[in-house]
Amino acid sequence: MPSALLSSPTFALQPSAEQVALQTNYITNFNFLTQYLPDTYEKEFERYGNRTIASFLRMVGAEMPSNSDQIKWAEQGRLHIKYTSCTSAAAAAASTATFTVADSGVTYIAIRVGQTLMIQNNSTGVFNKAIVTAVPSATTFTVAYYETAGQAFAVSTACTVFIYGSEFKKGTNGMVGSLESEDDIYTNNPIIIKDKYAVNGSDMAQIGWVEVTTENGATGYLWYLKSEHETRLRFEDYLETSMIEAVPAASASGAATAGFIGSQGIFYVVNNRGNVWGGGTPTTLSDWDSIVSRLDKQGAIEENVVFVNRGLSFDIDNMLAQLNGYTSGGVAQSASFGLFDNDVDMALNLGFTGFRRGYDFYKSDWKYLNDPTMRGGLNQTAATATGTITGLMVPAGSTSVYDQIMGKNAKRPFLHVRYRASEAEDRRYKTWITGSAGGAATSDLDAMEVNFLSERCVCTLGANNFVLFRYG
Image 1 (cartoon, rainbow, N blue to C red):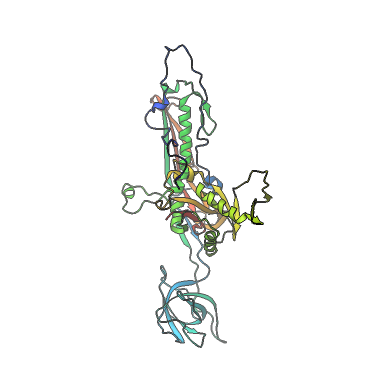
Image 2 (image 1 turned 30 degrees about the horizontal axis):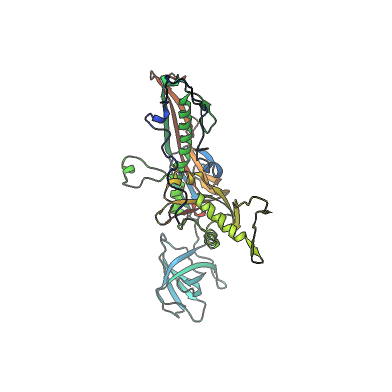
């Protein structure tokens, strides 16, 4: 059904700041031939409310210094051993068999003589229990089945194998060989982010009749103050969105050829190492059950925050509202939400801040995904919106990793920003003024130039615990 909200008139997307003078920045209605003075509102009306979108990393992350061009950390691998692409060279009913492991990235298996295995057919689910009698090569092992019927599947059948224990005869030697723990090493590199605002000295000495204001509370009748403050706010937003959207420059890409390296932003990391819900928005309890099932296979973090756009927020509210309603005598009754009952004389609260389904999920609107000048203005239609992001689930709390710089294990938030800093130079957030106007005296340029710089990257620890909600 077509929307009842007409597309015209619509919301304005014309930037309020450009490198050229906008007609809307100048008063064009001066007319001294009229004898009547118009009644004017001096204060600028804030029709878009708070226009900044930075808040996400402040809520879930932390910032800490780094003194290197590269950030490295190690994350634990799995404790137990399992292979999912194993094939037997023996026929069905054989009492012994030799298996070949073909899992991606496996060059030397961790199965040893004397260990007991669970072996299951990937297609049918039939299984055997067996004991390892030999390890002929780096990717093969030989077993003897415990069952009288022998192997329960045909030759070359794809199987999953995991170790559940071991068994040795009396008076025998111990386990042959030992296992070394293997960590996954991840890296990221900081990028330099810059911006600048410039105003000539003459314009700084010109006062306007409009009282301007910005989100950080700065007010006045000098137009350049508004532009400078908005440049600062825009730069602060970019400090966050760069950490969210950054991608590394692919080998032989135009950016790499030009000498840029990029960085691994949150979306990039979760898309490649995390969990992705490709159906846009989960709308039913069974959808969330599949997410819970995936979390069980990952780190099983108890508390998670889901940062959502408006569509996903409403879908969660609608799902929970349907679960919460009830009928009595065939008549629909008012639902009870949260810790109170919604009385007929009260305003019905249809919004939810969280729910528990195996894990705790707390919902928070993410302005970045709703802002029409950012991701909120991208195509949101399921049929054509491949890649459009509707939300991100972030595990709460911190995790323990081995910090290569500190040389020891350290507790770190799952998301945190590393910025370049040393005793001589702190590049977390630098700002300085050049020129000869506005109190600066660094050159003969009749202008004030306000410069902004930061060098930073984001570390996404335990990406396997994150869930990205998107179309496609």
